[in-house]
Length: 207
Image (cartoon, rainbow, N blue to C red; front, side, top):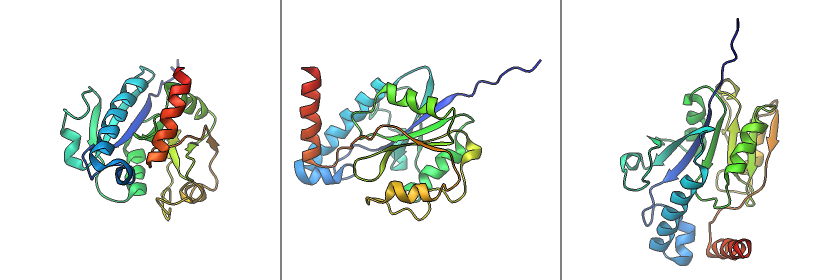
């Protein structure tokens, strides 16, 4: 008798140490580096509370590497690993390759609108697709997910023009034969204007 093997879903959250001058520097130029780091610290703490769910495991992947072991920053029981060397593409590729078997989803910590429903939708979508992206309003993406480790091609994330409006289109070009799907477009917080828009929207939602 063959038994169906249940593969766990894995959510990986890439985080930077919330220290002034090390995180959200564009926002810091508008509101001050200390306030920018404070925002990121509290945003990521809130994110971890919002996304906790038994349907998936959560792993925090932290930069700089030594900050992965600073338990006082994010008081949680989640596994933590260093991001290691290389550009963003090299670090994400390594995460997909080294992740346990099952669907894998990678997000950052600076998208305040991410909800549990978004993550559920990603893993459901990966049931019939190889890759899933959550586009960002700036031309990048706030989420990337893969169905299984064997789906990671060697060219993924290579020749991507990071920090430009071409990030998503460049990444898609490295997956020419993949079954690719997209979920909602969301915005990260990079400037004071972004922060004000989010605060205004939140107040309308709460109201």
